[in-house]
Image (cartoon, rainbow, N blue to C red):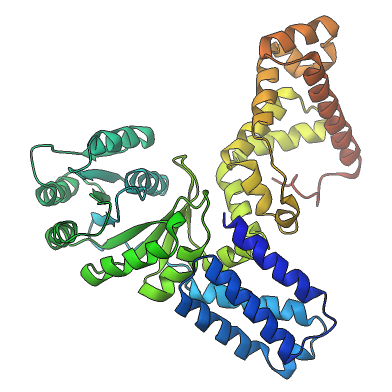
Length: 438
């Protein structure tokens, strides 16, 4: 996410940290480079100009120039200003006083609205809501079927009618949702390859017919300034209440994230960071600023862990640690919970101090698949008592998992090392050991 932008900021800060002290000239030179970085990231030029002027005004003063670590102080000012232009505080979804809450999704064709509708429905369902998905895109071939597939993936009902027009479909869907006790109705409206009067008129009529609580503009994060320009045009016709940035796992330069809030005065509420149905996060300006500046995002990391880790399994694992009874079945369970948290490289980048050191490195998620295959090729006795795995058993396990004996040996050695570590820690007690207090 925004790796190129992060690398460019890191290059600027590297020069900054090499200076013994800061002067007005060095601050001015630094901010000139920051301005270039922002423009190359396709940030709106007015936003970039205002940003640089604001940081420079706050930075040029005795407090910064005389500070013990002036570079860190300036970086902190830049961080706070980045968070400010993206919204300062996080803004969540508004819910209607009387159900159902109607959420209208709007945006251009190809921005990811249909997939996003499913992601949003899954998130709301996980919060105890009963959402209804509405197929209001009757223009794009197979759009209705696509939404039905997405709905089945997340276990949410889809309202569809091929023989009607989008406005009537949405209106009847809201009535259906009210009669069937649905808490939230999500309207997946049609998009076009470009903004046209027909599209906007249809969206305006849907808005008038359904009175949505939320109108979310879905923006393709890879399009940069184009997304901001499109959002401005939609804002002129619709009372947008929020923005969702999609495809941020791709080659997103950061222009949309850093510009769209300031230009449209509409808060970013969510971001989509992958194709998987659960690759969906609430947007936090301060956390995003930290990610962009390569500072990690430990709060989001912990939240992902809390959402993915089974507390009952964690308590059982702690008891096994205390008894020094940790086996390959337990190891396998831990791998499954780690996988739920998302791609390993993205998780590593959230940890402060590690993300910046991963430049040019890749974390192979396929290695976890190989480990799973090896463990799945073992018998129940072998998983519970790895010491029984002799030479012939290793050959059988390697053949069954499509790996080599060397791969099996490597896994067993790593597991033995982990067992020794657990044994050493158990001598001192687990209280206060990071990661082992469940």
